[in-house]
Image (cartoon, rainbow, N blue to C red):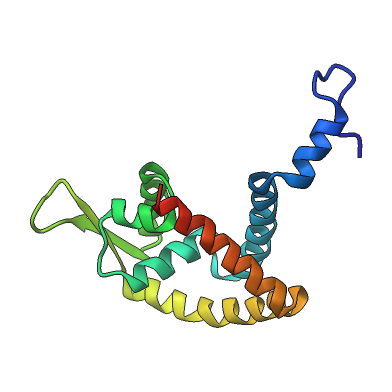
Length: 157
């Protein structure tokens, strides 16, 4: 695969260096690959992987503020708000005002959202078991540990 054009000021060697050594580049490629895999898995439920992750987060939080949800998911507030609106249109989540501060928005799963999540979790578990088997437990564990370390180190900045 030719990775540089004739007009490129970046030598092919540099492109290959970034491709082969950049953790950000590698993690983005892997994340997109995994997202497509789980998007296909959840397609019969009408869910995308990102929506599943948001719903799981909501299931584990007590009607979080949208900002808290964004922080938990390491996403920007605007992206979370847009994604929540899509889930709200499907009546899978409800977004309401905070009782103490009407400017603050909180989200929670509806009964329909909880029911859909109950169907999705066993699918996720089975697919994740297949993925772990493909990677092998040492590699899967190492990846999780390394990614968790990156997130933990961000918190100490």
